[in-house]
Image (cartoon, rainbow, N blue to C red; front, side, top):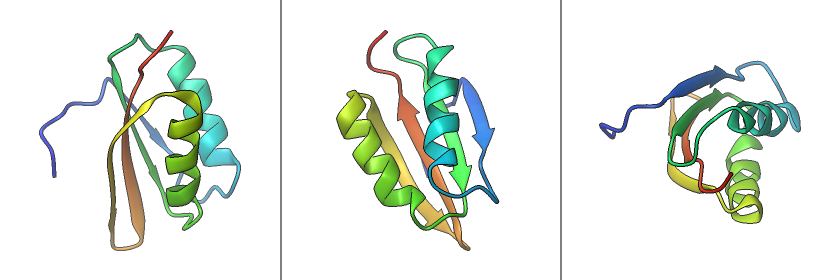
Length: 80
């Protein structure tokens, strides 16, 4: 676990590709550079999707973890 505090949290449990990434992208649009978004999902595809998306967009994947079938991501907005 980490003591970073997310500025915003979105729940994508029950959603499947590409919706967790779409909702993450939309949530990041309203955030300031440096803020952290927490996203939780239960789609196994969300892990590789989130890693790929953050690399493509230049945002920072601060944390990716899985507990009891739930994936939790912390993403730092890196550019405006």
